[in-house]
Image 1: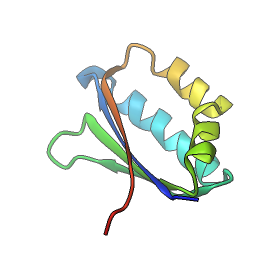
Image 2: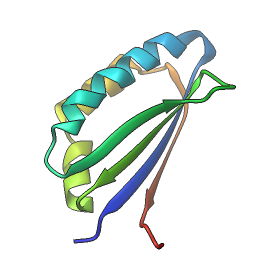
Image 3: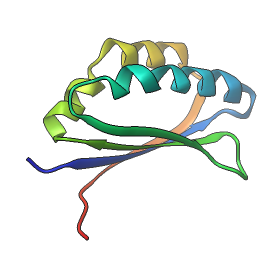
Length: 96
């Protein structure tokens, strides 16, 4: 199995920063308990508080995909509908 690294960038609408932050924080403990999760770390930009970034490592892409279909992720999406300005996700593999 090849470990998968995920870098997810979330940019909240300026008036929705606290809502998005609160909803992202709810994901941490439940996701860290999921099968295959090695780490799931949330960061907030020091210069732009609307910019959040998850740095994640998973045992495999299949286990990460199971996470992506989890009910708590669907709840996050519903709670933040219209509050996120931009979302990018990169699937990455360590090479060194």
